[in-house]
Length: 162
Image 1: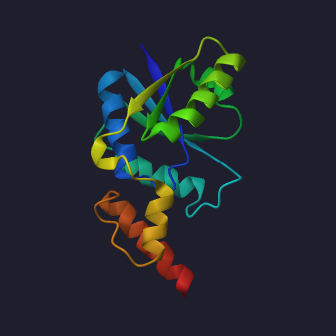
Image 2: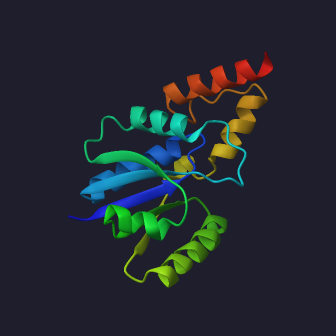
Image 3: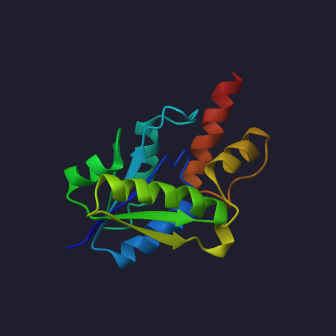
């Protein structure tokens, strides 16, 4: 059985993320979507909230589980006995960063492979940061994120205004 991990901040999860998750679930026996706690990012949602949203939007995928971790990805991979990291790519700029991360992970543990999946071209411009910016400026995000995520973003922003 090949177990893969799709790590990311997912703040919030977008339709682009969901596309990668669904495609990975068709390719691998088991997919763990792992929310990374990144202290250098200003998160809209807590790790627990992101995990809950991801569990909701991946509930239709029986071989997908959602978890979270802090620290080195390679340590987390050992804990799960997983051997493959999935990373979604939108553009060349993503590749440069992710390539660097993949080489560092390989330096830390040569048994872990990183596979890159190109995003569906419908989502090549989409990022969580862009979704948050559009939402904060009052723009519609319904076609960018799953409905439950759009609702959660709207609620979060309305609370922030009060």
